[in-house]
Amino acid sequence: MAEPVNRSGLDRLRPEQRHLVAGWIPDARVIADHSWGLVETVVLEVESEQGRLIVKAGGPADSHIARELRAHREWLAPWVSTGHAPALLHADGPAKVLVTRYLPGRLLEGTPAQDDPEVYRLAGALLARFHGQTQAHDPGWHDKLRARVQRRLDEPHRIDPQIERVLRAEVSTWPGGGATVVPTHGDWQPRNWLIDDGVVRVIDLGRADLRPPTEDFVRLARQDFARDPRLEAAFFDGYGGDPRDPEEWRRSLVGEAVGTAVWAYEVGAEDFERFGHHLLRALHPASGDVS
Image (tube, rainbow, N blue to C red; front, side):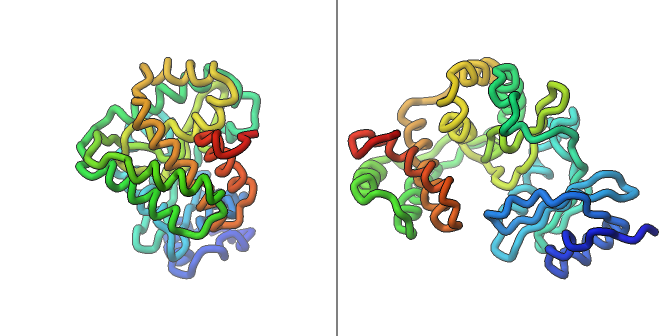
């Protein structure tokens, strides 16, 4: 059996996680650490006799691994069957650790492909397949959305007080009730797409859940669609149409902007925090300059 090398990566896992990984992949050799750094999730690329793999492990307070496991077990089959998402090999939910096959490709964010409308058409078609698997009715979706945004506003943040007052007044008027929900990725944007010889693949299902389908459009809208309308047109061409209702869409954008500003302050990500404040000013232009 080959001796593992670069143990420093595996040493980042908690003891129970290391024990599980040692049993699943006894000859694991860490070759890259893809952890983001702003959250407690550890993402390691390893080599072994089983091939090139990804080990993903969450910290004690992590909730992303459970969501990712649910996605693998319930919703990822259409993508995995065509090589567009990683196949799950090993997992332990209580220990918050999983192992998947490595997907070929490079992260699309920051490459010329991020400005290619054809990439967005392909991404739209991929997402339509994911959303189209199944649907359900969540009778309290709008109540939960309103409560989540209000709860976020109660947490520590540096949102401009005038904007906060306007936000609280607006959110208090949001309707309650239910909505049609589908499997959603939860962080659908080029940061979680791989490009490989013209093929778009998908990673990081840590925010997957049942939501209205438009929830998967907000992160594209705030950055890529805003940068180039051709990307938005190509995306919805691939998706098969634009299902956004204007009033529901605004509520989604407000929720995303508040969540970004508050979360970024919480983790000390100043660039993301400034971006969240920019999004809020853009939604409430009367309260200040949006530049």
